[in-house]
Image 1 (cartoon, helix red, strand yellow):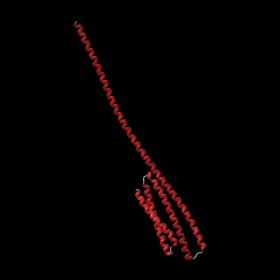
Image 2 (cartoon, helix red, strand yellow):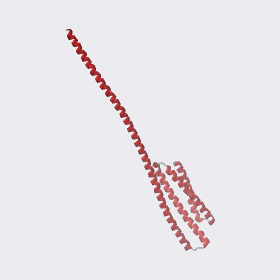
Image 3 (tube, helix red, strand yellow):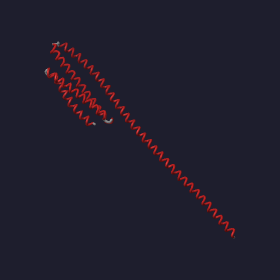
Image 4 (cartoon, helix red, strand yellow):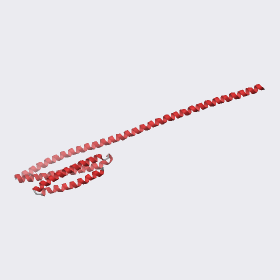
Length: 217
């Protein structure tokens, strides 16, 4: 399972490096090439998001005792993804302002005001996105804690079942031992009764022999 995660991880690293390089080149390109580059970056950002989703699914399948390290790496990658999207938005805003100025001939002050307004809205969206991501992370961690609790309860239930089975076996062994002891005690009592009877017979025999001997004399 971790090998699949590491494979996605390598693909994500290569893809984000390409995206970073292309975002940095956007402001310096001619208009036609900028448009093509922007479309290319949008496509690669979607691919990076899909890789993150696959990595997230792999992390959920990793055993809880090994999941912490991968969860921390996922948080780092999501932060990196958020930074790439922010840089790309700023690059697109600059590109849009440049195209609009070329088409409409807006003055510099109007363009700067619009750019500042758009950047402010972008920052608000980013803050909202971070809050949503934090809420999602809390939900994932809560789910992980719930799974760990269920696993612990399952282990405890198995221990209790084994303890009950051992108690049943102990009760059965005690029952067998009790029956064996009862049988031994019964045989001991029978043997003692037989000894008493034999003793009485011997005594009677001796008395009779003495009696016959006295009568003859």
